[in-house]
Image (tube, rainbow, N blue to C red; front, side, top):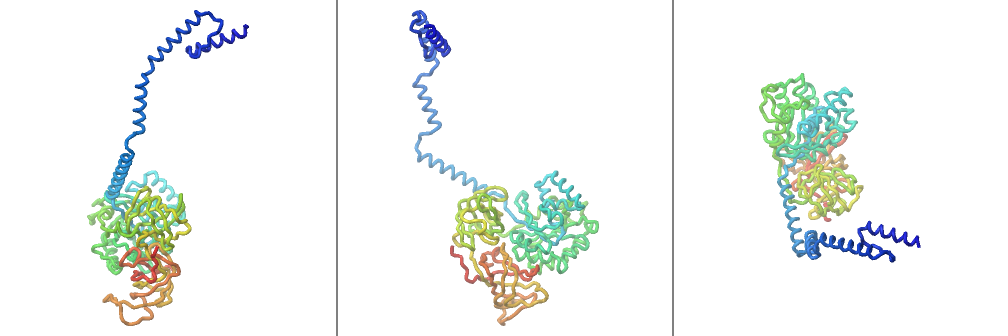
Length: 534
């Protein structure tokens, strides 16, 4: 049939196109055609065989590839190798950690408008943390607000309220580095309304930079009674800022014009006051003339043409050379929490006061005794495996919700956790009571100790301290007045984490404030009813 023949012919065509594979031979085709087709098929087979590798060799090469991809050697050896690599990596990390530059927190304190934020901004600009374009943007913004000289402060004062008022409210944070040291700048507010914020900044600091304005009238306002220069110095000393760099700012002002007389006058007034606040002015205090706005004597030594009478070091050189007391990386872990937030879990912020922390550590949050696990550690902006004392960290933890944490709680090691108390004995130095009030049992004030802010009550005056001998008097007392030193028992309504000053100075010094004034500074001498069992 014609249709059958057509179908067979079509099959034959498609088979030829397929290089003779699967050829269908019509039943009624002549044998010559069949022979030709057979011959073609054989030729094709020979060709394929020639081009294909010998099966044994092929198998061998496949086995070899397999071996390269999946080594078949001893699993114990592989495990050992992995362990060695891990140990080497950890060792390299440890070494990098050990060779890391030292880290210091620097708090800028002083009267409102002395130029703290401007100096902070200038430091960031000179150390390459802020580029020219950013500066131009801030200049334009400051000009629009008719505040041309504030543009450097805008680097540190980031929110609108601060820029509009020209006053720092929050404690600004920023990082910069010199050849030997990594610094965190804490830009504290100078205005008296924001002293509690300044206290939280200073409690994290290792070095204080007291900024004084040399401009006529401004130094006097800050220094007289009621000025913030005095209060800030006393607070800084109480909060453990042991070294002070006193920078006399605005020396380029037309009313000053780098005058040696004005600089000496300020130094002569400040030295006795610093001594009375407990600073050793020969060892722990350095005076420097600078211009924050112009960036003079900050990163480089001053040109003698600008100020011929000063040949001392620049601000950066002074910071590099300052020695701070060593901290114990192997002690019990203590990190007072200054802030917390939610970010893929609970994240707490604070400065490590003692001990070291690693990823995977099991710690305890005191005083609520919640056991937590460390998931990640961030130092500045970098993720790190471990961190030692003095570092400002953000730590991601599991096992607790952020609403269960308050500022002033302490992240602590499970062995020897920080004590939690509602009552303690302290030695107090009365600075200035309001309206010449008397200080007696029943006196209420606000207690500031590390990051804790808590209302407290004096429940018992134990003894007065003789200012000459520094020893307690035998006479029983009912009240004391301004300037007295006294040992007393203090009570708070909620459990707080404190340590004896002799064990942990950072967690054992405090200030008492009332109605916006600092009335006393003190240190914890004994803990009563401490609960530290985890």
